[in-house]
Each structure stands twice: as C-alpha cells, then as structure tokens.
Length: 379
Image 1 (cartoon, rainbow, N blue to C red):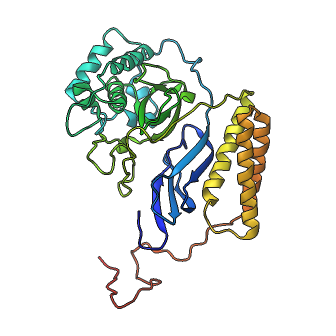
Image 2: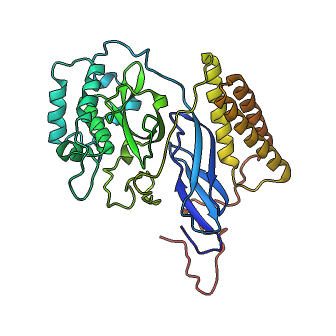
Image 3: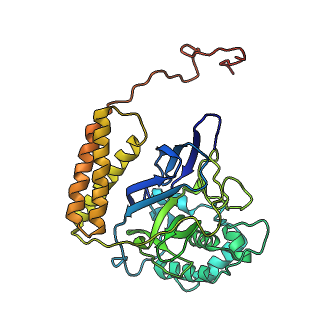
C-alpha cells in the first residue's frame, strides 16, 4: 500500500474463476473505498486496484460464479496409457518437472513405479494416485515450511502438498497434470487457500481430482477455481518467501500478503438452475461477455451518457444473478442480453495512442525537467 498521496492505493488479487468457470457478478466493499478498477483479468487471476481514504484492515469481496454442472457421467471406460507422440501439444507442458512437481526426484519416481504396477488403465491409475496422496500425513514438521511434492512425500504436508504430490506422480506416470488453487464448497469453513489437481484424459479433456477427500473425479461445481497456473509459475510455496507465501502469484513484482489462517475465503453452493444445453451454453457465453465489459469499464472516467449505459448494464447483471438464485434461467438470459446491449452502448471507441517508442530511436516526444532532473535515454 502506497501512501504518498492523500488517497491510498491498494493492489490486491480477487481470486475468482476467470478461466474454468464464468464470473457473473463481483462486489468489492470497504468503508473507506472510493472506487476500484480491474487491471488484469487474464489468465485466471483477477487483479484489482482500489483507491481508499484509509489503509484497509478488511477488504471484502463477494462473487457469483456460473459453473456448468459436470458429474463426469460421460467419462470413457478403459483408457489406455497414451504415448507422448499421441498427446496434444497443448498438454505436453503439463508433463515437465517444476519447483513444485519434482518429477525427477527419486521418491517421486519410485512411488510412481509402485502405483503403476499392474495398472495399465489411466482412470484407475489416477484414482490410485488420488488415494495414495490422501494417505499423506497432514503434518508440516520441518522448517522452513515447504509444500512441494518432495516435501509432502518425504515428511507430510497440508492439502497444498497433497495436490502437488498428485500432480508430480501423474506427470511421472506420463499423465499430464496441473495444480489448481480453489475454494471448496464441500467444506463448511473458511480457507486461506486450498489446492487440488487436474489430470488430462485423452479424447475427453481435463478431470479434477481431490486428494484431500479422496474424490476422483471431483465435480466442477464442488470447487470454485481461483487460479490455474502455467508450469513456469509453479513454486514450492515456501512459507518464508514473501512472494508466494500462502498465496500464489505469477507476477513476482506483486508480492502477496498473508491473510491469516482460518479467515480468508468461503464458498457456498447456492442453487442449481436446470435448462437445455443450448440455454445453458448461451447463459454462460452471455455472462462471460457481460463480465468482460464490466471489468473493462469499472472505475474509468465516463461521460453522463456512458455512465447511464454502464449503470444499466450493472443493474441488469445483478438482475440476472437474482433470476438464477430463483432458478429462472430464461429470465437470467434475458437480463444478460440486456446487460451486454447496455455495455455495448457505452461505446468508448478505439484506443488512441498519444505517444509510443521502441527505445531504439531518439528521445523525441519525451518531456522531463526540474531541479533534480538526471533522466536520460541511452545504453
């Protein structure tokens, strides 16, 4: 938090789904809040900049997320282990060793070999990985605390290490896998963070497993996905590290603070709304469009007509949310269509570039000065 102006500026992550699942509406609140802007919405992280009149002790947020119900009833039967050459290029990065998933570690390789014994079918093998990681002791006896696969398999760990161990074991067995930071609705209390694992089934797609409760597959609606990292972003989550302590960010210039055990985030499955596939697909698509508009316009300067259109779009998004809470899918779709139309009416037009430079030419266009001016452009 920077206090070099009368208004405090805070940058924080709002961990809501923006990749696997569809945000419908988001509220950020604080007694000293002036306004806020979304400064990054892809990949799965949502980064918010808030202006406040005082340093916040608590910054509350609430999100409603649309999740396509998937009970994995259409999972294929026997799935033979797939050769690397037959896997899509898009999933191959999820086989590599990282700081979190130490695929080449002896304990990972030996454990994987024991699980592979007499199990040529991918789905039962994934279930064996899930069940094995479920037995990892819930203990972090070593200092400094680290939640990577090696530490989990050697000494025990929290759910974080369980998920990273499952990811490492899957990769060691040739099954692409990735870790997810989630808020579980199957748990009735608060989580500072909770980790689970996705693994790839050829010809089907990604399937969630939950080592903490020995559930494979774990239905998507049971957990709100907060973040899905790229392989290059996987860290061992060493507690003493200011960047990836408890929370995880792929941007090392934005350290994330420790929210404190037991009081951070809570997820609740509120309602199910049934509809035809074409209806649910339309609702998900409209919700994604409306949220994209909302995050682009929230907190920026608009003229009176634009502000009216923006406010209308916001109100219609909220109305769509209320319809879904009542199980009214048709009403939600109608309001989302109106919300998108209102946002489109804001009509900001194309972005205008005032000045740009590639730093390869001269310094034309730059203005600087002052008594302490020592600025220069050069090698």
